[in-house]
Image (cartoon, rainbow, N blue to C red; front, side, top):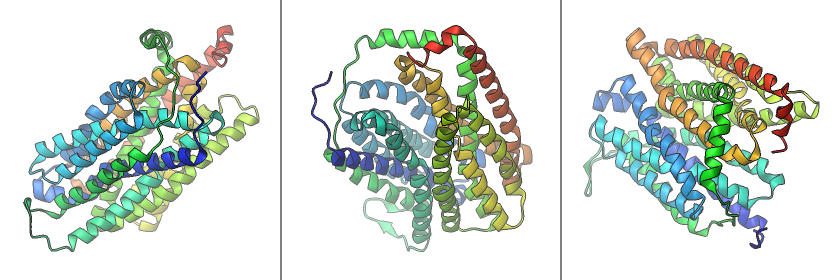
Length: 440
């Protein structure tokens, strides 16, 4: 038993607030490129596919892979220091994005952003577990995860306002840097808050932890357990990964769709998408968790799988139809509906994994799922839509058809994988040994 002193509630909540701010800044640095697409295409003569590689593949290439060794490091070293170093790295490299002169330089810089941001989630999850008692874990994790909707929404709103301000700014030759385009200055500006916030992590609380022996043996045991249930886990990992691909593809290109077909400015597109994500997305996460708890309390078996199935099925209609509508009010209404319904499954997807995985394997198997999900969602989400635009329609003004076709082709695959996963889980429930999982 640990003899470390108890962390005061004030210190715990303050540290969680810093982690939330870090997540919000990460989303701002990650998503600002979405609002700069018209300027990047004009100045660097980039195609939609090249833009998508900057949005997704360049970022995810090392983000997904670096997360595993960084997670192992976070099990041994100061997690607040790892977060601070990661934030300094991704913020500094975001500033360097503003110095890029061509696609290759910008691609390399975006890879650096991915490496830096890979330090945040593993360290944050570990810190939160030590900062709060088990009865508060769900609330604390939910508040941190809402950084993807609250932080992401604010990032789009504030990022859009920043782009609008910079576009009206008379940018001449700057000291040491010379002449800079407005999009280059936008990268430089959004990178600065992260550098300042990283310095604040010296005031964060590093929670105590218990050292678990024989980590390598436990990892090998977890991989063996995973291989024995390959069909079950593969169907869940792929389903969650494709859900992420659909979500990232929409987030990456919906603002551009609003700009191209509905003549929004970058500020208007950022504000519109940000408000939807901030409101409908956050409500969806909360509603999904509440619905899951209510169904489980009523004895509904496999409630989380059912929520994922219904959520996916219900959001396909607004995702397919929304981009094809002419009235912008209906376009935004369909986006809000799809965002709310889609976020119902955001939290329960992790619960699905935890429910079928023994406690002693959960962290390691979760890391494998995150690797698969990040490669699919972050690596291919933006590019899938762009490939349809560039090579099927060969017309950037067909972006609305690309968004609709993405949902129409990916959605049924997700539903099939979730059906397969549910069948596998139900089949294993019938096995006598299945009852030992919950007690493991």
